[in-house]
Image 1 (cartoon, helix red, strand yellow):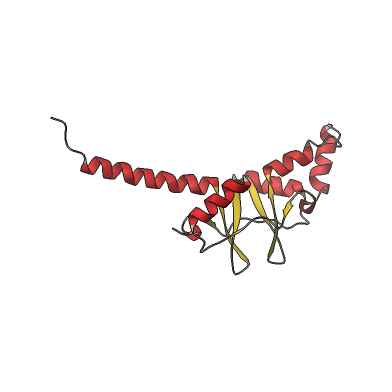
Image 2 (tube, rainbow, N blue to C red):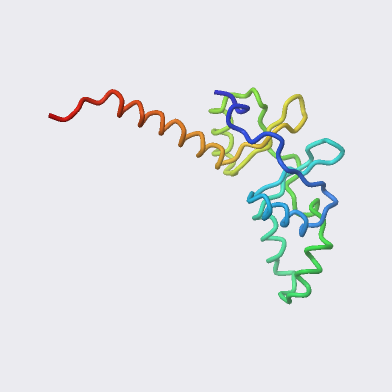
Length: 149
């Protein structure tokens, strides 16, 4: 099994000069927790919902509502993203990707093919795959089990 068999292809991305408000909006709209950051077609980082929460809950940030709105529109993604994120290749074995994600304790990794972003592999993708495997195993078990007497 290869990463390309399980990944989400063509993920939604954001550029490093967009606001963190724009990043949050894209995450909420799409229902995801991370966005690859792409500049001129090149993967330059990744930003997560955790990065955004940390930026907004910094002890250096005032906790007034108007200021939160101001920050959301004036802080750029580049200031909160993780630059040069861990990546996997689309043709890497899935087990290699899983081990890499566990080792680095990340919930998702951008997938590249010859240096170009082609997808993202997330915990959700892996759980969806596991669910399919378990459903097949359950069906097989039912098919080959002996009837009770």
